[in-house]
Image (cartoon, rainbow, N blue to C red; front, side, top):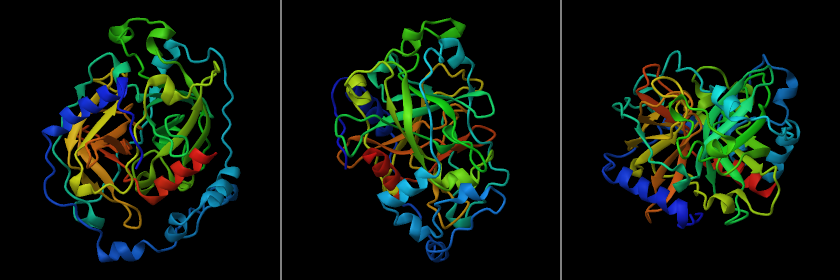
Length: 380
């Protein structure tokens, strides 16, 4: 397990998380996968037949094959789906970032009923609460901005995570797959940047105009590599479904201003990722920048959701985590944090989809496929 550097601003984040989850005692036990679901784990992956053949290049043919992928397999797939993101100086002004539209798939058209594929009843809504400023106290949280291949600009939330190959010097950022790639039949987003501690002081709140230094106090970090679930690129869509069960992505970023310091060194810390975390023992707090009314995308909020329930569209994939939360689109990609057995906070998921009534959020359960993706990009 990675080590969180409990110094400076990251220690403040840990303190907030401990206070948030202290009153959320895990209840009950997490349901285990049914025997039929277990049998489906080794089944063949049914790839779509209505996308260009080139998009299917390098994909696995079974779930077992995907879970056994090594560095060479990820590298083979990535070489066939190249991400290009040259730096464009002065592109992301405060006004342009403010105008970005929140990215989040629409709620499922037909959400699975409780009991189907292990899906559990939705938890009760939990009101989002503002995170205390300045956000530079916990700068691992921030925003991702991008432009779509066909036009339009988007925003999501994201988290700086530890790099297993470069301890203490991470340049890795965790977010949702739909924040970096259009999904089925589409392409990577462009002009992809990460802004840690966005609008930390609140200078851009309340409709006020702010300087770039005020909204991006720790700089703008451009993505040079990105990895996501291979299946998102051929299945992902505009409404929640089975593709969202692997709706995660990891970016490797750099500062266009140069310098030897990594993102982690610059902001003061990074958060470890807890893979295969025991569902029944989790007490989750989701963080993000919701941007649809009554929110405006300028404030960092959180929902202290406690023990997550399960949401499953496809039993062959890990069931999603679901918590009560009133955050809206814009919170997508934001980190879900839970204390590990030793009390240190870790990322256990990211916001993927929500309900139309904004009562719950769901995020992918991070297991071997997510672990492999992080290990791959850490070695690139």
